[in-house]
Image 1: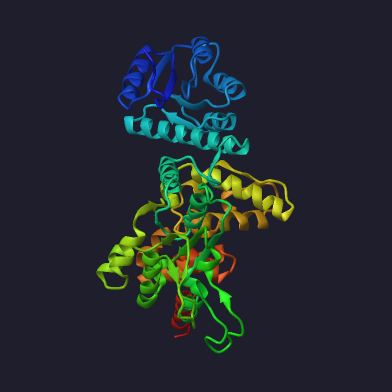
Image 2: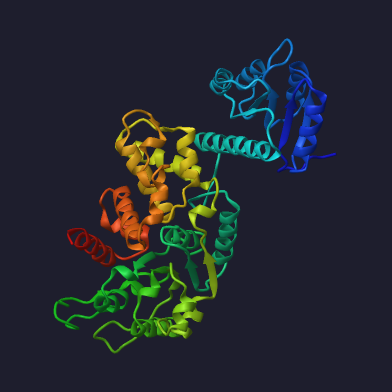
Length: 451
């Protein structure tokens, strides 16, 4: 009978038959494929013919011990994890087992819950290590220049492929820092117009008074300082793609002008009365819920539906699983080369912390953190203690329960600012606010301290 592809295979080794039967029955209820062996000799035979993900072995057995089996596995089966169990628990035994490479150490008797938790953790460590090894060997592939193999990202790749097969308007949504411009570029460069211009515009980064002239251009003498005629972004992108990032930040009047471009395929330069035809594909992006903005009267409904022809929603980094490990390796390699340093290694504990962190600033925050770690590292190994304090375990964690919401917000903003090495622009991007709001909050914190 064929074993399902994703079914983990476990080998339980113990010289007591009843123990083997109980563990096999309990573990099989959790969906594992379980093999059993009464001694190390039987275990070695099974290891030769089966791809075992985790060996759960007793510590003390006649002739050849579980510790010997552990050492054998560590030197011959790099992708097999080992969990030690014993009825003769001791500090010395635990130390020997962990030093030899055991992922977990269980003292008999243990509860079913303790067993299941230990098995899950050991298999999780195995997956973490294998993902890092895979990344180090560059076995993973990039899709459209985007790194990630998670199910969530596979769905994004399928949507990119569909979007690239048409000329329809695309709306990309997702939290700040998820890589919306990368997806926009992927769509453009996957079309037949890949050699045509791709023009990105950060609508939130251009002052409202200048946005119209930047987008549509202006003629000489249109306003004070217009000493020459200048084409705008739409004319520059003619024949290709214009990417309107943070489109939700545009004013209602600007939205009306964008709507006319979408409807009539023409733009009118500031100071001119003659419209010009443009053949431009529009890809827009936002980190806000446009539908809610429409309900509040802050975004035009007709423009919303014009943009919402094809929609691609990018998953936050916290929902992308082991993609975090792949991205860490990619960024670490990139910054090591940039800083002229040896490529760093990350301890297992460090990878676990980074893998489990919630990443409010998504991929952009991860890139900033890795850049800082590589820049500041002294040796070649990055430990958990090298991480920003906000990511590390703290015995003071419960103390935040006695803080006000304003105090918690202040702590978080300071930690993010520290992780961004004092760069307020990057910190604002990670926090999902603009630079002006960040400055105001920092001034507010300073006033509260002085008072």
